[in-house]
Image (cartoon, rainbow, N blue to C red):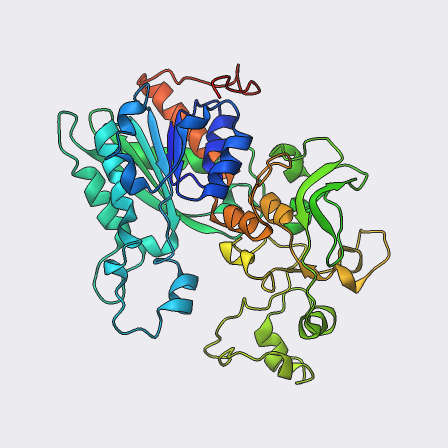
Length: 432
């Protein structure tokens, strides 16, 4: 397979774990491609490209591939279609059009690669906004993507494609994260659209898959106070790990913990909100209207009304016994919407001394756990970049389930015997 808009390599890791060979990847973020190279030493560095994808085909990147990929995967950047991005930057701009935003059309670069390479199967991931009507235009960007892929011309004709809106919490990931998954099979290899229905059914039925919560997600990580931690932290809590950590194989079995740094939260206002005003499950709206007004002056932004609440996630305290909200790249700016309550105060089975200084925003490693990255997956760059890479990633465990689904489909159809990396997964490339 090859990975377009690869980021830090989340979906590639999932395909690698399923035994697929990754030949090539591209992204325009230097920190992300550095992270990708570090964690995928079996891939030659020259095959992990840091460049604008719009330059790649014109510069001969496709001709450099040593073989035609069976699978093309990718998640084109989606800020123009995300609800958070739209509401913060464009909601009051009458001249703005999502359909004219250059970021909306980045999927066309993905289509160009598919048209050039003609893989057997394609996979695309994107935000739920892709399947929503753009204002009152009657247009869904997801339908534009399907039309483009299905109308690719040439000897093999186009692709039979379909999409589903999936919630990652239904696929063994401790996170309420709704994403659109597009699957496509080259038309000469697919009987009809029923093949796609079968693939989506397989994706839902692959085991193991549990319903995991935040406590399961963070099992075994050091319990930090505000301002503690760093690029590398030594020592991990004793005891067995959760079913989630064991089944998804996240714990590397060492006493080193990477990218585990907690913000200091120096503002007194934030500390008061975390330590006194917020309880697990509360948001800024609750502080404004449901706390007898004692702390309402600390919420200095418009939270709307009871009938029409706004920006509920600007301040939010998480619940240990529920899945996390969607991990977002905005964590690079602040973690006030992902406040972790003190484990020893709010988990009944925990034995330890409570300390309000553990009420703080989640760390990059905690965000990575929630995204299903294993503990030995190290993120490079600055602290804020770690969060961006993690928030933009496709959860590796979802990628692995998609890869297994595709492999089963191809094997049963007798289409391809997939190359695997299992014999060489731990051996670094020797050409650079």
